[in-house]
Length: 232
Image (cartoon, rainbow, N blue to C red):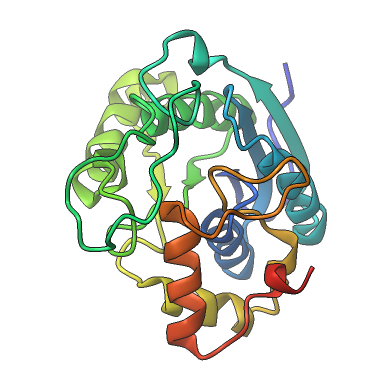
């Protein structure tokens, strides 16, 4: 087991997927003075190229430690991101139906893993890049979910029983995609390191038509900026 941190900087476990949002959320936490411990989950996702992006992003953020953890959610099924069902394409951005790319309880599982590592480290802070505005309608990206998990963390841990309080930081929760991009650029982030597509080509090129690609493109367009991954 990794020993508790002894740095004078407060430590935070950040869920790092390699996407634009998690990169920005982590950079915000770093700006706030947190020492970052990055957790990337290899959960059987078909867009596994995001793992390569997570390594690039972790290096750029100079994290204290980066763990890639295998938790095979594909064994459960229930999502086109972990199975052979086609990824939805060309959906309207204002559709409220939960798409097949929703992975059952994914963020609950990820936050539980981050909580376990945080408690082992002696840290009380977890960072996640969920967004409740420009997203695909996933139930585990809502503020109610984040607040509920914070309450659970206090009940489920030895630190919580002793009076400690865990904080789940979701700094992008109320931001639109363009606002997220502009914030990241203000922090000096290179979004060319990231990967967002749910259904990339064998060469890793974005499809341009899945929800994640459409939201990303709309964000860069609204910000009035070119997307660096489109220049590869």
